[in-house]
Length: 89
Image (tube, rainbow, N blue to C red; front, side, top):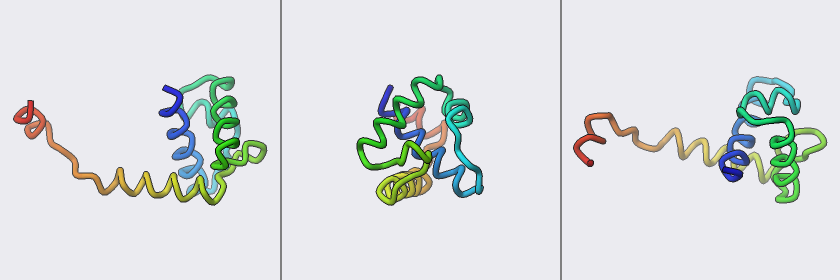
């Protein structure tokens, strides 16, 4: 669960930056669907990993690269239709 939260935070901060929005703790928590405490703990973990500057709620260069590359992979992944999933089952 924590890994999903960390990944989600990276992507939301990236998305907010693209929209020229200033990420704040309460806004970030609402966007990822977590409490402020959980979000703060996750930001601290990301800060320790060198992916986020928790004080400024900004991605570091390493965090930007990770978030952008995983977003690009998700966008490029082939989408399987419902029909294809039924055949595979």
